[in-house]
Length: 135
Image (cartoon, rainbow, N blue to C red):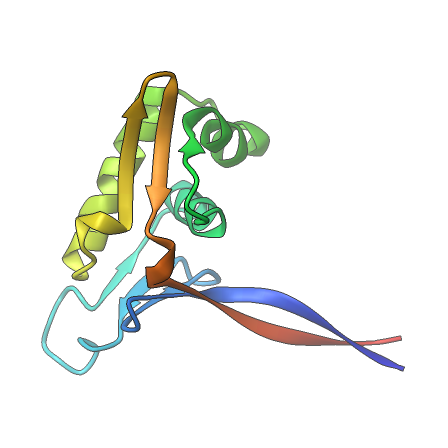
């Protein structure tokens, strides 16, 4: 008997940006054939983990700092801090802007006790693949 397991391959943002989880790359597919140095950016492991965590949780609620620090840093044996989160987020947003991703994809939220980020979920499409398992 065969069974298929659905797994996340990556994401598409605004129909022309591909997030390739396996290669830690974000690609503007409209710029690949041009002599543009900003068609592809490679993200470091922690930066990609942060981006993926945000994309996975893009459901119109605020993704709180504490949840991000726990899931992106602490659970991977890394030391977390709000300063480190700010630094990596700032670098991530700079890299994304090189590809033409607008600032409204990731919004910083600081209202009262709630501090975190919100993603514009209607710009994000999850891409899946099916892994076949033989039983």
